[in-house]
Image 1 (cartoon, rainbow over the protein chains, first blue to last red):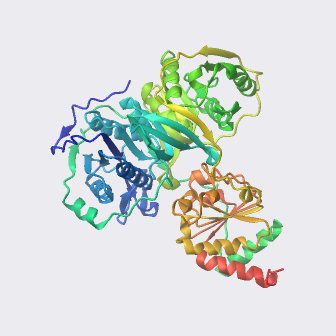
Image 2: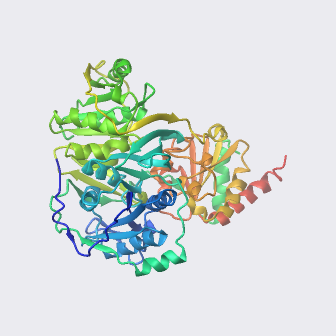
Image 3: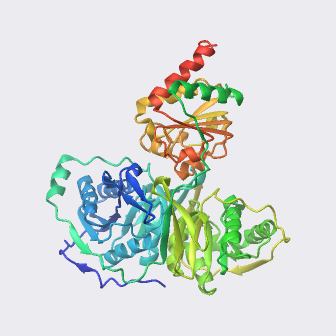
Length: 280
Length: 326
């Protein structure tokens, strides 16, 4: 089995102990590019690189996870919400965004590399952090917009031995505060209903809530808040289990016909195509 | 072909095998191993007919893991049962449909058997697997560096094989050990947002985030208005923004449609959306971004600003057909 020890991770800043909180939540947030239009394909290296205009923001699915954590904190007392992100220094902005939304504490697991880590490396780094801190609930988005892997949640659960449910579209807690009533979205809009106990990992589907816009008071508080910094070991203690050989452009030749001309010519052509297919 | 031991995990619901299982089996036979085994999990009463049907259609050896804990789908039970079964088998590639259930347990399974995990596989090379990244703008070709791998196979990426060439495969039933689950399953709820208008429509005009704002939905309505039996669809992003309610959502987790015409307006073409509309007879996409991946799905593409193009198109149609008020 692939395991990584947590002893290699050095804690740089002392972290605030959560003390008497009854439920500890960790939200994993990823920073992604704002728009794929700014990505550049480097022909010589065969890699995809960020362009000079690339701006970064929180992965949208993770915003729903942060919001859901905050809603749990509003519903029951004694909840602490930590937000963690893995990556180079630029991801601090995304951790701050989570604080601005209302998270209590931000943790930055710093990696040197600008290139994307694979999900397993990410999960091991987060698991090393989570092991010593006894989180009851770990939330993250159903997938990342950039690598579209949908893996970190499940991998974390596997590494930590937590139960896991993905694609959560409804989350309720009644009576027993350590038991969560969940609905996951499956094909065709159907929902699977289940109950999980702590500790568990949940990946949150978009649409479960409306992520809040940071309030001014939280923005001000987040500005003075120190982020906890943890250096990721470099190189990673165990080699990655898979390697990216290269990046490819989408397959050419699959494209349909692009209608060209002036807007008027395009409209005329489209109307005639629709007529040929007896649609008009 | 990798030529390793290979298992295809069948997914099913109420005794009905998910079609993606057959696609995944076809993928496994073509790229991983000539004779993979199919593994199906279910309660004791249902396992034999289920395994029999899989063996009939695939011609492959089917192993039925039978036990009350997997009577209903449950990630915890699936993961633990598969780990204990696979650990005895040595190195293997495990292929699972990339559906809401497949992706629910695949990563945990990979940790449990020390395998790498590659999700949403849509192609393969020489010992490599290809998947979309960066909002579908690029594909990455990845190579497992471990003797075991868990792969989830994108629905619709591979065609199921037509019937068993070599006659029905054999069936072996293996009882599962019962254990205490911390998950309580509570069944499924039918679609909250089934939209009959959408499934019956001959023309679906769909809105994506590229529309820019909720106010611009009137453009989509305007366009839909020129077709007699039309309905309005949307991407998940548009529903998440609250521009339209979820009954309009088309894609993996929403409605699946196959109308005579699908008009995609301002839709980038994420795989989750495309899987809900790709069987439409004629697909036309209008988007300002010439690199939008929807143009690879569409039969015809138009690179234009919707705010300019739709009113122009509708005006030109009305000029020829009078007022359209008839």
